[in-house]
Image 1 (tube, rainbow, N blue to C red):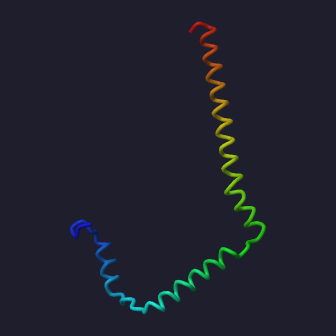
Image 2: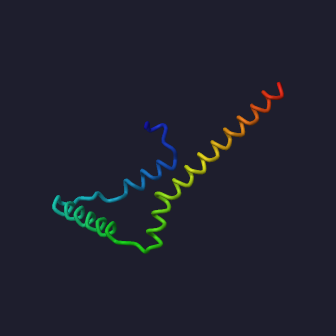
Image 3: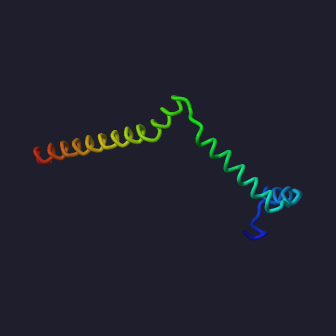
Length: 95
């Protein structure tokens, strides 16, 4: 991105970012933060939800896509059958 294409909002944002202090941390502290963050994420993943949460996940991952796919297939088959019926009527009537 060139300097000419920046908007006023981007200029203000970059000016505010320039005022932030630099993050100087030693490598050991950075590694400790990373390990702690991974531990928190792992705990969050292991935490079991309520049965309502589990059912909502089952519904959104499996049942809803199956229902939508089934309804779409049913509609397409119905529309194809209707189109063939109309075509047969036109052919039979000689239109």
